[in-house]
Image (cartoon, rainbow, N blue to C red; front, side, top):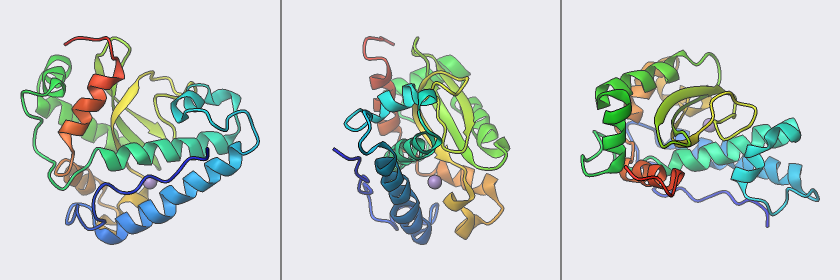
Length: 209
Ligand code: MN3
C-alpha cells in the first residue's frame, strides 16, 4: 500500500484570516502532495513498502536522503493539518490532560507559549517547531531543520511530536512575507487543543497523569 495524501479536515479557507486559503491550497495540494508522491517513489520496490511511517522514521539513518526528506514531509504535514481547527485557539480546557501536563512541565500556559514561539522564531532557515512527549510522558519544546522531526534517529531530541508548526517560508510567505513572528502568533488562534491532548494521551499509552 502506497502512502496517501490525507484530505484536509476542513475547507481550505476555514482557518482564515490566520492562514489564508491560497497558502492552504498550495501547501496541501502541491507541497504535501509532492512529499507524498516522492516518498512513494523512494520506497517502491524496497522492503520499506508497507511499513508504518513512524517505523520508517525511527530508523531513517539507514535510508536515503529521499526517504528522510519526503518521509518527514509526509508525516509532519499530516500532523500539522490535524492539530489545527477553525474552532481552535485559546488555552486548552483545564479538563484536558494536556493542560495539566503543560502546567506541570512549563509552569504555565504562557511560559509554554513563550518557549514554543521562541523555538519557531529562532529556527534559522526552513524547519519545524515541536511540542513533544518524551518516553516518561514529560513535555518538551524543540525545533528541527528541514523535514526532520523528533521521531527520527538522526535528531538529538527523542520524543513523540504532539504539536508541530511548519516555519518554512512556503507556510506563510504569501500572507505574512518576512513576518514569521506574526504567523507564529496567528497559529495560536487555530490550535486544536482537543486533538493535541488526544495525541498526548496516545504518545505513551500506559502512562497516567
Ligand atoms: Mn510545509
